[in-house]
Image 1 (tube, rainbow, N blue to C red):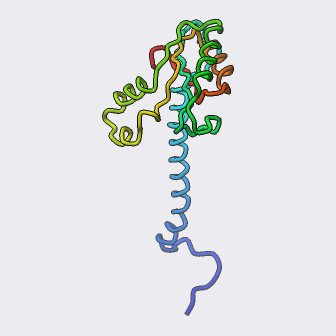
Image 2 (cartoon, helix red, strand yellow):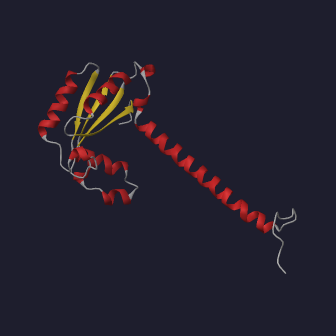
Image 3 (cartoon, rainbow, N blue to C red):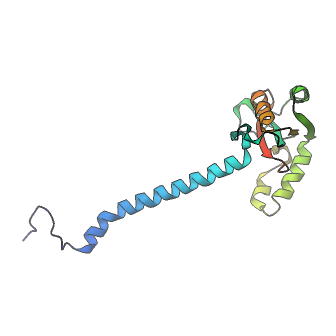
Length: 173
């Protein structure tokens, strides 16, 4: 004899009711995990690039890193090649002419690689995957305030030979 069709009685077995509830619980858990991952990723972005803060921070110096292209760069504009000496010189010249630039310091690939090794000394996986030519040389720039930092980034982010520009709170570089 078969079960009659139609609505199930309220005393239906608990296992059937639980089976229907599982997809809802799984979807809710997945949404919570995605939200948490997005929040953490967003926090890292905000921590590294303070450019999102407008002139409320005016008066507080900032450090800016202008990273040059290297062969291993994933940025299409770098065309899998190192920045030319002339491109680096032009970026430095433009920085020297900008109001609010306090200091410019060049960091070679070798110096950057040594700093990278110290930073990630406890991460063998990171050290094994990186080679001296992979870590870009850069200009480390101290600017008067966040407004100057944002102007610098806007002006130079599309300059030939420039891979990435990052704005940091003072002393984080």
